[in-house]
Image (cartoon, rainbow, N blue to C red):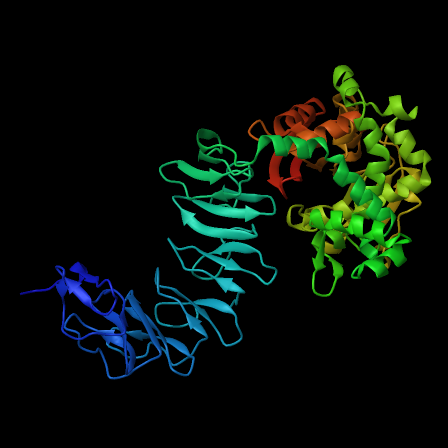
Length: 566
């Protein structure tokens, strides 16, 4: 009688194998795993770990600490001394090296971790498939694998170790039916083989697509089925949040705004770590007042309280609100709270008129107030610089500075964008154009002194310089369409005939509510607006530009690359 190993199963107590619900052999083991091709199964008994055939006979006399199933004719082994390696189906070593850990062969490749803790892939012969070493590497599927770099970001590679695309994500899955699950700071979504998101929405969780549809969980716990364009086809479960509590929290959202504002004013975050008496002393508060605001900040998950030591310390959010940090949001708390809130009180009027409410509460428009108040302007520019340092760190990956001679950064604040670009391209020259009041605050790094010029200008008058590239980073959203069109026309006049205009802006989408609140903020403060890609395309066309490309840097920053219409 011929027994097919594929028809065998593992017994309920996992001590032996069954065939047609009867024991396959008489011996009992401490544990067994199922059979794999070519008909061998990992087992463990008092003598150690090894492999058996369907008769319960040992493959070879060697015993190990742990054995695993055969995949593509090779099995991972953990030896008694802690080393890992692979054996062939005849029991012989595939290679002489020992590793800290071995995976299983899939697609003629296998993941291993070396003695230094680095991951890479072996080829079918047990040799390294490429020279690179990664912080982590997953299995190959359909000729692609996920790897993680030292910064904790993930991308896809070919079997030869070359990147499939230049996109990196905070988490990533292999491709399934042409799409892969990916995660950025905003949540989970799906990308195509170019690493490009196939829709703009972000979710708490997403499953792989199955026949064109995928199950996802939204930020409020609702479960939905979406198509490959990110559109909801059906809802499986409603929101798991209590709407009364959710709306109530939003109604008193200003509690959080002013708690942070007060903590920044009192330098609470700068006083940590410390117990209540120390924080009270540094902040000129009574111990009772210090305890009350510390409790509120703890509730907001900005700080942590150690019940044993009675010490409060900053969490990541609290660190961002210290005054002297490079990425400090303390200036944003000060400038936004002191100026924006009064405009928001008149939001209803702004919506009725379509105009900024700022003039009604300050007797001057937003920009007049900004540039006539030196202290406020300094805080505001610090806040904008923090966002620029964060959002434009990878600008050189999206702008090919090597093809340009001179780039103009118009309305670029303290110059973070152009400084990053000039640092990445040592032959590129740059000019930063800004208001005279801002120019006074700008410092030129010594290493860029021979290539970086700062000049005063007015957005709505002919610009004093020309170049073969112009950058407008979050400039147009400050203005309505009429003013934005005027800015674009001056940009056009400053560009050479073969020049390129680079726009950095948030892009609204009909499929997502993201950006809606920021759009209201622009309306009620500057009178500006956030726009969709289609709206920007129309605006650019009216000014004589043609859109070449669009790239997403993050959920809040997109790059539109344009040129002059021929």
